[in-house]
Length: 322
Image 1 (cartoon, rainbow, N blue to C red):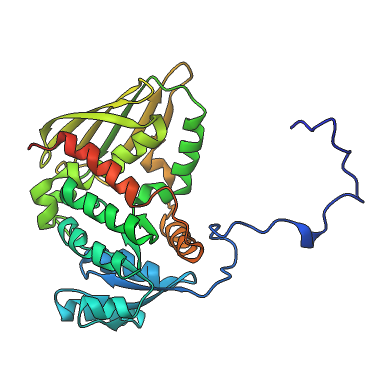
Image 2: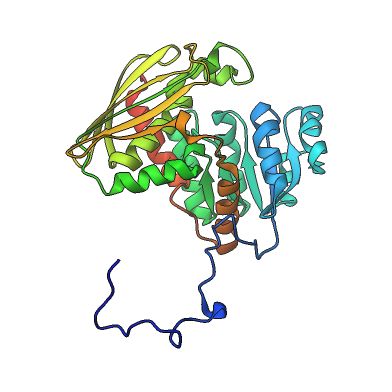
């Protein structure tokens, strides 16, 4: 480390006292939360709502799960009761009792309800993809912009510390090309073999994750071409604004124990690799919860907002058949 020769040499007398040391950023989940918890209402009662959104939002201290609304009241009750949350009889009732709304529903449902929440002045925690189609995604992003509310996408990989370290290293590199894959058997059966995933396949479900990582690691993606059947296996070729080219393999219909997520960057330096299996037991949820609550309390969204979701949906739309 070098020092500025024009600066005085450090000494005990010039060292800052503990009280003058800068406070950790509000987004740091290891520091105490200095505000009241953000009151969040949850839309949805499926496996993702029960297994992730509800317990994460209820855990706090940055957020408090106030109520759950779903099409089936009994399912909403099963989701809400373990966390001491109420069951809202209607979506409007949910909005009346919260500051922010989290969505854990199919993309088409999210796209229909999110603009209403934005117009009601509620912050939005949005699932990927933003919508089932580009036009609907644009309506969501426009509603968020017009209302001036905070939004944040649940692009879960981006909240993992190991992924953030990888992306920080990638920004300092010259990348000529990249390869990525995200493979699993999620569509073969189980909680995530849901109707919308089986209908639209890996492109709409897994595509936002992989395109987001390639865009962040290599450079802005400006064009995407694809081939294959998204319900079985799809190959993407991405052209980046800096001239780099990347390719990605996506499937939710292959028997890969534990799944496989990998990004490889190539250029003049040694390859830089992100291997999902090597990340260990890291969890994205404390970081996601903290950053969402900080955005709500400061009124300042981060980079992973509805505009990011719209960018990813625009890329996906280049691949989907008309």
